[in-house]
Image: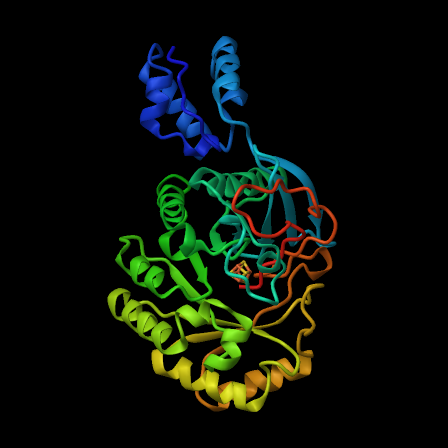
Amino acid sequence: MNNTLPLYQSVFDVEYDQWSKLLEDQPEYRIKQVWEGLYRGFTLPHELTSLPKALREILSELSPKALEVVSELKSDNMTTIKWLLGLHDSNQIETVLMRYSRRDTVCVSTQVGCAMGCGFCATGQAGFFRQLSSGEIIEQVFIASRRLRALGANQRVSNVVFMGMGEPLANFTALIRAIDLMNREFAIGARSFTVSTVGIAPGIRRLAEVPIQVNLAVSLHAANDALRSSLLPINKSYPISVLMEAINDYRIATNRRVSFEWALMDSVNDSDQDAKELAGLALEVGAHINLIPLNSTPGWPASGSSLSRVHEFANLLESLGCNVTIRSTRGAEIAAACGQLANRKHVVGKARRLPGSVTAFSDLSVPK
Ligand code: SF4
């Protein structure tokens, strides 16, 4: 037994070869049992009853600490389940499972906090703490998969959306390893992953070069530079013209349709003029538009547009020739609307402030 397993943040950071080294005195089938237990059976190594007890005890000692479910909130009809998860270093993240009749989608975080500073987003207001490892990203889907099994679901996690805490393209290497492993080992189809970005143009180009073709969602929220820069500071680095070039290149390279996410804010970005500007950009690159009313956060004065305004805005876009979907604010009663993870009570002051972080961690909320 080689007990020199390097320090990992999650058991899903350990590569197959590393398990081979760790269990070098064990037959090959034991390594397969551990690997398949994790990725097919959603079972941690020390829980594998097919392994000898002594080996399970060793694995329990050597394995990285598992993500801990600090709390679980459920919508009344159990269609949305949100977890607050504790990491090995006392930081906390959120993950949401959204259940539909024919699919189960997990919304995962890719960073603790976020450096993008979008004013309407509580995570952006709080600042950046650290990157998640690829294993920590995968483990969120593992936890959702275990929960589904406990619920007796007859289907597995089918879709993963990277719309939780953090900007996925700012944690590129971990993101891609996580997608690759989940695609191969959890058997989640490439096109069942959606990467949501606030508009990091070089990251979009980089994503186009990755062999696995995933869906790309761009959080636009404003279609002119003045408004967009006031809502999304990243727009000062990558203004709309630069972003549109990157999207167009992505579209040509991948032949994939991009979607624009638009969180409708009352009297901020929901005028007829906003709709016309948005339509112009969407038609330019053949983008699908997803509309959702903003979930308010304490640090931002604007509230979400009324449902009637959302429908008027959608109708106007459609009359201009756009493809539009109004997304439901699913799980809003447990602060888990699609694309927004809002924590109202658990996280305040709990996350450990790490060197280099710029603000105190006060909340989690991610309208991408
Ligand atoms: S909206 Fe997304 S990119 Fe912007 S601050 Fe929030 S988590 Fe970061």
